[in-house]
Image (cartoon, rainbow, N blue to C red; front, side, top):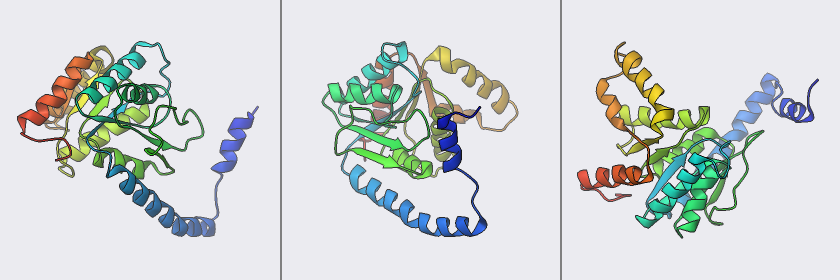
Length: 236
């Protein structure tokens, strides 16, 4: 039996005729342009920020929720704002920590049929809503001085590998990517080393793009060391 929620989703994403597709695609261009313009205008003024990614399903009180909040708070004390996907879970924790630290708290929300909704810790003038994932991804990469990747699911992995690919192919400048949770991420890193690298699908040097840590202090050390090493300032 189909639930009411599934029926709504099915109706929303039902198959369209070819003429409907062509018409919708033409008008979608203007919607896409408006999302880029709105994003550029609002985010160009936020100052140096670090993006925090992770599962929307992580609950307050759980280990990684509390750690994400602590990391975000410490980032604000080091002069960084925080950007998240704007939803619940790790995203809420990141915005909450930034809010508690009186730093910039940005939320890039995406319309989804489940899980996603704005959290209450985003600055009122820094909450953006997107229909298109690819526009949202551009905003994360363009306006972040680093990625902090907490345990998460497909969406988290998508953002992680997107950033690594763009840096690897020199489409964007290098910035620190920090994976938090050696136990959670260790198996993935081992697979990359023993399968991707051994099969010569990547260069072993590509692993230098990421740092694997356990604590909030280590996160800040990686980010600060990166900018000191290259004599750069955030948002240089």
